[in-house]
Image (tube, rainbow, N blue to C red):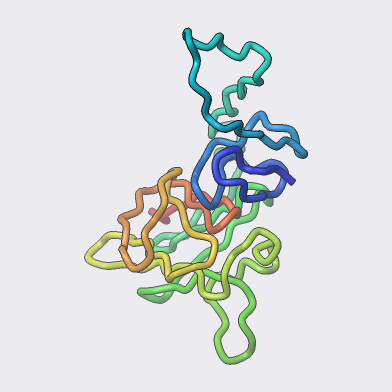
Length: 183
């Protein structure tokens, strides 16, 4: 586990950002904690702390998302969710709106069920987000999920639809997907 140096929230190993406050986590050891001492008044300027660790630059997104050239194409008119870690494509077609989530019971199954792809362990809510088509656009809307939705690294406010472009990266809690449209 990693403890956020800003808000002290614990995250799973490998997280790049704190899901609570958004602070940078890469470069911290799994058991790293940061102790913040109370402020003191100095007669002179304090010396910089040269023993502090500096976080390395995170890998480029291209290194995280794999090789798109070897992937299966998305059928025309469909929306594809390419699960980055699993190199799997989930295809959504035939409707104007799709619920993204994980197993919710017989009464309410999501259209894109991410539980089978680690969604439960990665914090995906039962009804996490909605993808919809409106006037030739594809929109993403967080449905008040417990662990949030991010579009290209920026948080998506619950209830506020955001327009998607082909190739956008969406993070449902800690599950990363690339959005692809069929041509």
